[in-house]
Image 1 (cartoon, rainbow, N blue to C red):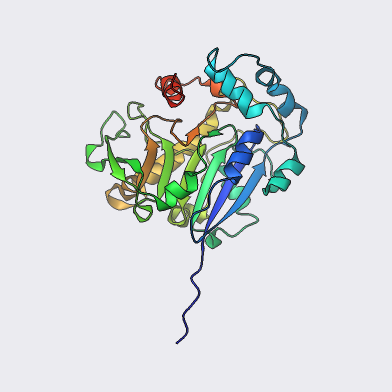
Image 2: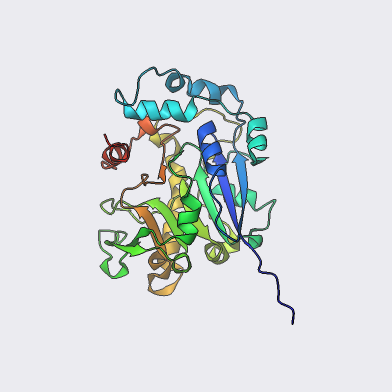
Length: 305
C-alpha cells in the first residue's frame, strides 16, 4: 500500500517596500518556520531602497544620539534605520524583489504580487508595511502552531453609531478557527472594525471570497505613481484609507451572521501595538499622529518604561 506524501502548507509574506528598515527585513526573514510549512518572502517595491529620498528621510533619526531612557520612540526609530539597506542586501537576505508602480498604497501590493504569482499556491498571506518593528522570532510559529491567547470579537455585542464596534474576549489560538489575524484592535475607535494592510494575516479563503480575488480600489482616484517623497501629514494620503473601508464593508456584509467578523482575531487590544510588532506611522514609531491614545503607553510597557 502506497501512502501519499504530505504536502507542506505555504505562506507568502508580502511587504510594501517604501521605508526600508534593514532591521525589519532581517528580523522578518529570520523567523522560525512552523513545522511542515514553506515560507516565501516578497518585497513589492514602490520606490527603490537606494532612492535619495529613502536615505534623506531617515537621516535625522539615524543620527539621533540619545538612548532609550532619553526618548524611547526616537531611540527605536534609530534602531530601525541605523543601517540603510540596498536591493542587493534584500536579495542576499533571501527576499524576492519586485518593482511595481506606487498606485494605491498598502493592500494594492497583493494585487500587484498576484499579477506575477498564483495565490492559489498559498494557504496564508502576511501583508505588512516595512516601517514596523518585529519583536519576536517566534511570530510565525506562535501564530500557526501555538495556543497563545488572542482577542476575538463578540459578534452579539455589535454596537456604536455605525455598528462597527465590538466587545472582545480572550480565546486560545486555534489556527483552523480564524480567517484574518491583525496586530491590534482598539474597541473605542468608532470605526474599529477596519481591516488594514499594515500588519495582517489573511487566509486563502478571504482572497477566494474577494471580487476577482483582489482587493477593491475602484472608488479611489489618488495615485502617487512616479513620486518618491513621503507625505508628512496624515491628510495627504487620506483617500487611500477608503480601501480599508471597502474591506470593512466586505467583512460586515459578505457572509451571513457576521462570519468574517467572527473569524477575526487580534494579538492585542491596542491598535498598532502587540508583543510581536510595533507599527510605525509614515515611517517612524515616533510619528504616531492618530487618536489611539493607548499607543505610547503600550509601547513603553513593552520595554518596561
